[in-house]
Image (cartoon, rainbow, N blue to C red; front, top):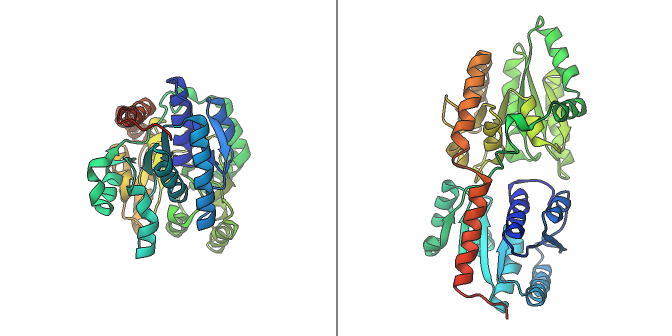
Length: 382
């Protein structure tokens, strides 16, 4: 419960459940978002749910059974695979309804991984967080096609609105990053030309494409672009160190900032000129892409996975071939050539596109409708 789309959704759905008069219990290993979760009225249950150890999975099953029976829980909703196995077994033992949400594409390169993933298709209802995800689930679990319900990941568009971001919030993030000093260094090197800030927001993992961005940036030394990799290393310190080494080896120190975890993503997005999604593997939604569009920022993205559902090419953003540094270079060059008015128009069109399609209210209403339907099917705890 530190960061990420699945974690954010848990907080949002928990608050919606409480507001609708339900009780919400969330079992997890804890993290930064627990305080917000509890502030929304949910009860947090600390459990070692990140473990894949079969013994721990079974122990978690027993803990969940006790929780279900003690609190008269009707529905168990799992959002990742290890907890899903414990939840599935607990649901079978108690008669509670079982729901899963596919938040990730989950690698499935061999039979063992397919078996591990299979629990996500065993639910009474399988929520897919995009149309792309729904197609993936149907291909992997053809026997479950009738149980798949696509529900787009929702965004709070009141919270992610340009007018909602105060100048003080922006100044706090900029100060933490050392942004103004970094921009000034580039101005000095480019005859006073104002640099453009390109933000890659997300966990420091290889699939986010950080190394691809560095490779593309080697062709942009004469262009005042400042790249910000804002995200939690999450224990991947060796990966972060490798990125810093590559930046230094290419003499790109003045073109990159790596400020670490970002506690205020909305303010961070408002500071940038474009959000960059450089994922090298398909992702099932692309939360930050929608958030950036909502904040009227253009998006530059690899054409892969569900992100294609959130961008209108050349109107709200630009696409490049995934994993192709030259294609990314071309995209960044094209973006840098746009006038401020063209970038502004692109951003405004982005908000107009995502607001009717990806609202938090719609996600919560559709999810609670799934729960209501399962209760109608009568799933009393035993």
